[in-house]
Length: 79
Image 1 (cartoon, rainbow, N blue to C red):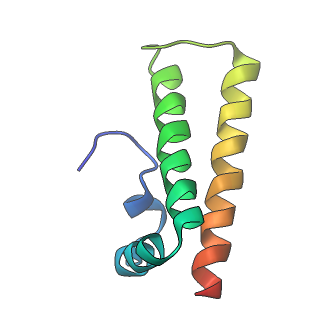
Image 2 (cartoon, rainbow, N blue to C red):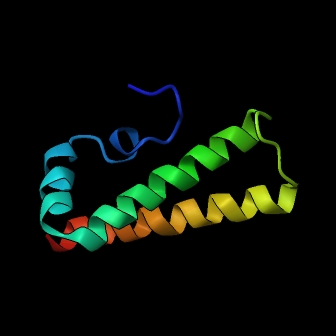
Image 3 (tube, rainbow, N blue to C red):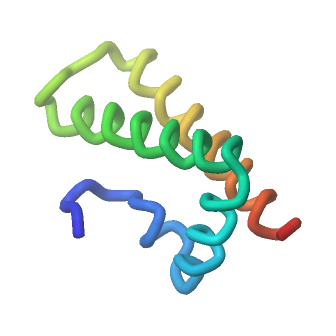
């Protein structure tokens, strides 16, 4: 497991099977998951000052991560 906070396994405990099934059958959902991981990694790098960004940019990244997480949650509830 990664040491990056906010992984999908942490955010959606007990839903790994459902996430995997939806990822396999829905390419758009698979892209959404990939985008979440990408943005989450960017937030983590910014928060740890490995790749620092301005406060506004970091806030926008967090907001984007939340929007993506909401979209994932909605997709899971529809499946």
